[in-house]
Amino acid sequence: MLGQNGAEQAVAAQIYTAAGVTAKDIVTGTPTELDIESNGLSNQCVADAANNRITTTHAGLYHVDFQTSFSAEFSGDTWTLQLRQNGVAVPKAACNRFMGASDVGSVGFVATVQAAAGDNFTIYVEHDRIVVNQEITIKQLQLVMHRLDRAG
Image (cartoon, rainbow, N blue to C red; front, side, top):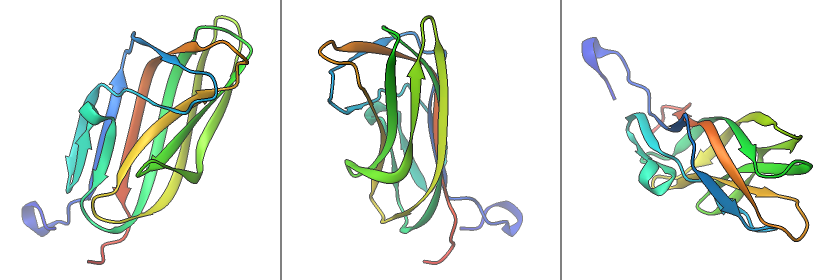
């Protein structure tokens, strides 16, 4: 798509949480979709924070950039955050963080994914605590997708 002065516009979308304070209970052993607060910029993709996802409107190859900082209710657990495409975990699009006492963990990943028009991308979280559920509080988070190829 061409924008002002004939320049090509990026196909991209962003969803984010800034200065988050709401804790979310995560059931032990159950991957859980993260709640995301706001829509960022979007062009020819759908930034849909209300449903915690980005939806592609064009098939193609996409660059994914994810970053977050968070705190947890208990220390001594490893947290895994992973990209899901239409509910299925995307291989190599995940990060882990062991949380210490009074810790705010920061993690991120970048990935390249093949998407069809209408694919939904979300972030899921889980932890390895035995028996007890625990809460996670997202302090900052952003998920950005940018289409790499221009075919089609």
